[in-house]
Image (cartoon, rainbow, N blue to C red; front, side, top):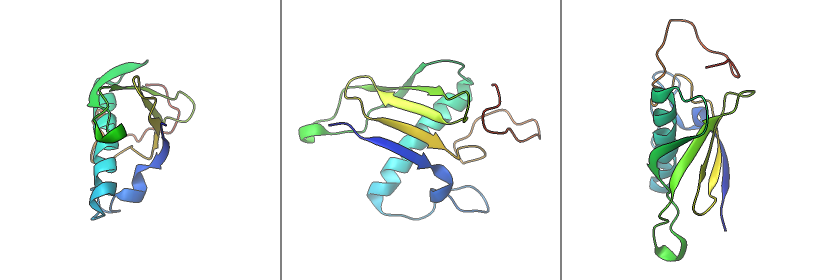
Length: 117
C-alpha cells in the first residue's frame, strides 16, 4: 500500500535561516527525502514531469523499493507533486520556496505560488 504525503516544508524549518529543526530521526529522514526532491526540481527549473535522481524511500517487506521519483510543479499552486513510478508512494510539497533546498536562481523578487516558471 502506498502513502500520499501533503507536506508544508515550513513546518520543519526554523524561521530565521530556513534550516531544518531538530526532530525525530524518522521525521528527519522524510524531510531530507522531500528536500532532495525540491533540490532536484528547483535546480533544473523543470517545466514538466521530471525523472529525478531521488530513490524511493519505501521499504515494503523490509526490502528497498527499486523505484525512482518522478516530479513536476503544479501550475496552479506551485507545489511540487512527486511519486514513485514503481510503488505509487507520492505526495505534494508546499512551502519549499526559500528553504534550504531551494536552488531557484533568485532575482531579488519573491515568486508567488502558481507563477509560471
